[in-house]
Image (cartoon, rainbow, N blue to C red):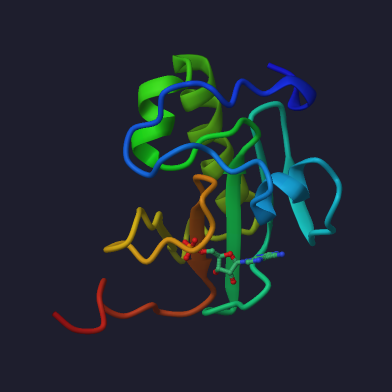
Length: 135
Ligand code: AMP
């Protein structure tokens, strides 16, 4: 599916209809800049504008999915596989495999998701501590 003719009528599990004006959609269309570090047919990766670690990168699928629920329900196995291969490729490109890193995807209100285009955060560059600050 080309970026110019996204099917926005597809049913969405979880977070309501896809908003084509969200900030990552605008980055994908080239309407807003990003500090790009990786791109292939399935994914685009760029530095987070407010980094929470020495390395903080966002990896986003190139097609319009609101959440992981939406992505895994609607995207093809090729798209899903291609996307997660891209996550691994970005970590490798950043030399994070040996020291280690963390990936995280926020979903919906409890997940504190701010941008309604599915994305994976990749953190690294120092020991990251326990998974959650507090429980
Ligand atoms: P989330 O809370 O998981 O939806 O995370 C959204 C992330 O997008 C936050 O970490 C923001 O700092 C980041 N962000 C928002 N706008 C931009 C932008 N224009 N370029 C890069 N990162 C952004």
